[in-house]
Amino acid sequence: MTDWQDMIVGDRMAVDGEFDPRVDDSRFTRQEWGLIMTATTFEIESPEDDEAAELVANTEELRGMMPEIEKVAEMDPMGGNPTDDTDSGGGFLGSVFSALGLGGGGGGHGGVDEEKLEAAEALVADYATELQAHLESDDRWDEIRAEAASE
Image 1 (cartoon, one colour):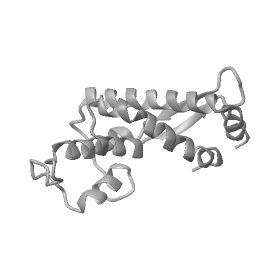
Image 2 (cartoon, rainbow, N blue to C red):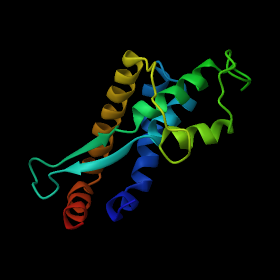
Image 3 (cartoon, rainbow, N blue to C red):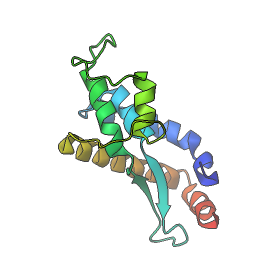
């Protein structure tokens, strides 16, 4: 995590609370949203340009996380096993690490629901917009942008 990202931890927590109703109204559960955010990083494009600077979500890892999001979606409300028994071993966290490219396994991540992936990317983009608006309304955007530009 870079310095500017460390600087916005509290802002992200505030936006998380403000954004909860959007997640509740989406097709994703809170657990799924947590995985979506785990697979997402934030970047500031053109931080040196006051007019063009924009906070954006980098969702490159999201496609790899989608099989794990699907497993969470298939779990029963009490946190039981997915309805199909396709768990490849290593437990849930092992699967998450593997999906992020941090563990063994690898291989293709076929069968991704493209519509669900697009919905996740759109929701994360909305979150990035809300986070930037929050930073601007708290007069912190210029400070954060300047820190990002100096890195």
